[in-house]
Image 1: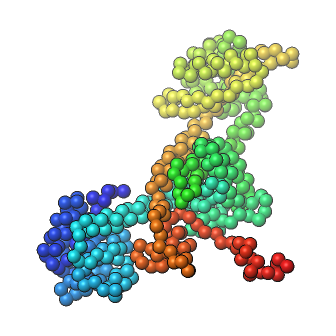
Image 2: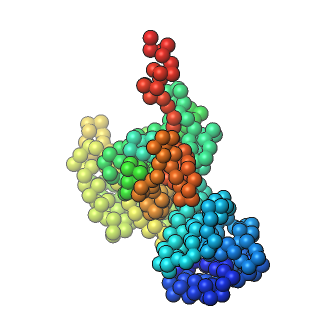
Image 3: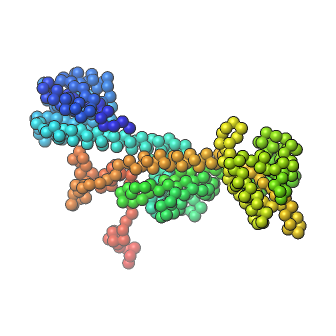
Amino acid sequence: MHPLKDSKILVVEDDTEMCESIRALLTVHGFDVQTRTTLPDAQNALKDVRYDLVLLDLKLKDQCGFNLMDALVDGDTRVIVITGQHSEAYAITAIKKGVTDYLKKPFEPDALIESVNAVLNRQRHRRELELLQYAINTSSVAIGVGDSGGIIIYTNTAYRRLMHAEDGINGQPSPPSPHGNGYTDVDPEIRKALESGIPWNGIVELVDARGNAFEVCKRIDPIPERIAGDTYGVALMCDMTTQLEKERVVAKSRERYRKVIDSQQEFVYRLNADLILTFVNQAYASYRGARPQSMIGMPITAFVPESIQPRVVYALDAIQSDSEPVEIELSVTDTSGKTRWQQWRFEGIRDANGDLTELQAVGRDISNRKRTEIRLQEESQRLKQALARVKRLSGMLPICARCKKIRDDMGYWNNIEDYIENNSDAEFSHGICPECARQLYPELYE
């Protein structure tokens, strides 16, 4: 998002001396300023250039400056009216036509600069919010935002698609299913992460809106700043059902290892107590760029990169003194120089008497899963930074003591629900309190 000083401003003023004074003032403050003294020239200028802000005099010789508002086909351009013929009718018309601010001549230079900066700042915040919403909704990663109770208050398209929440609209999830096994809008991992203040990631099983169970790789990041007095967390998820199912199938195949060992895509080797290879399957031999028979009789350290040798040797030593298998994850560089991740399980092979006869290592490539976790982490960092810039309600709000309506920046009175929804990320769900329920439905409390 470009800084305010890069904003393009068009000054429309038929008093050439006043027009030049405003141009000089804004230029000194670093703005890119163009001027026009007639309505037709201003209309042509708006056709050729996209201006961020127009400073508009309402009295342009025999023409009314309001006619220029119809030429603002780009709804992103903001307008500040500057006029020497102030009246209530003019002010009301200006508001109706979408004018952002209204300055009466003569005005102080500081007042003009303050108004310009305020208008451009609000414009920038709105653009940032729109870009954030676009980035979230177009992301292929399922994203959900939840409050301190774990209640999901915002979801993107990928999230709703993942959960099959076909009825969700305007960024909101479908309502919870009335059945115990249906889709719910409460995320327990978000609640736990916010309670601890620590990011969370792992594999979890979810149930979508159709009642189907599936597994996802999930990461939760607490948003570092409070928004409207509450804490929020961001959940990023990728469907891992197919990948995890494949891994489970591979794990079960280990039990039938002697029959199908060489047809597996897993890396498998076996060693004696001196860490000398006694068996190597074809997958591991191919990965090392060798034939299985040429590797047998060699120490395992001859085929393990020096950087990870200590971890491998430690795991192999550990299972010789303990019957429990050992699992580790390793980062390695393949022959093309690309980083890959592997998961290895080391276990002891024992005879009928329980004596250790060999050591066995079974490994698999988990690069896809690790890259998914890294992508989730990168997405979460970008999202946290963007969410920290989202506009929040602050300061004093003019509110009617009787009807509780709030007056906005343009002088309109709005329902409190509409005002908060338009100026924050909060959403309302309506219910009825016990006191009102007794007054409206007394027969239910007899």
